[in-house]
Picture 1 (cartoon, rainbow, N blue to C red):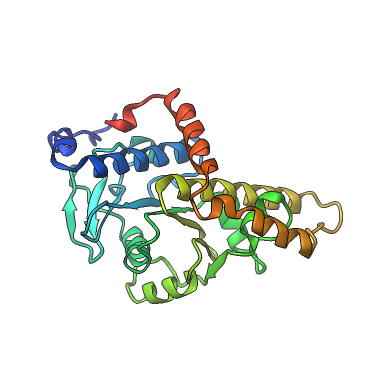
Picture 2 (picture 1 turned 180 degrees about the vertical axis):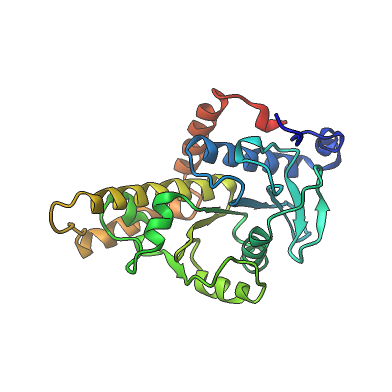
Length: 264
């Protein structure tokens, strides 16, 4: 590859200097990055996933700024605290400031969310640019329609003063559409956050495809069906159902067929 290497002497010792619990989270977060690359959810080097480090400290893991998602490994993730202090940066690349602003705000305010995933996909950004946002057009969308929150666009998220409004808009939800920007999901685990993002991205794909059909009015799901699916989707929306783990296990089998170097 180019002059930038995703491996440095420091990355080789990361596993030895962190707890087993942190290493497990690192591997899962690295897998989430690689899956996003596999599904073409990336925006080159400009989006970010994070996960809280187990333990009493207010630390979280996020990608090194400059790496592509398919270059992320368990060892080259950066550990940072909610005040922005870099705790461990094996490659010395630092982190994306917008990533810090968004992720630190949520990790500081919402201790129940152990992972936060943010994308700028074509269809996710397209839905975020629509006045009515996510529409009740598909079964996928109905799983989110009643619980999605919205945050108005304020420019590139570089200002710390935006954090208060971001958190207020998120409220008690774990699904946020950042208007004119993209999608964000949180979860009680990496597996949960990814399941939420996977379904939300699919809902946006379907919405944009339906709107592109041009064959008359769109058919919205009736209110009774919206309410019913809202209740039915609770089996995975709280992150506790066995379906979350089955979904993740299938994703890992799919990813591992591409290679397992994310675990390094």
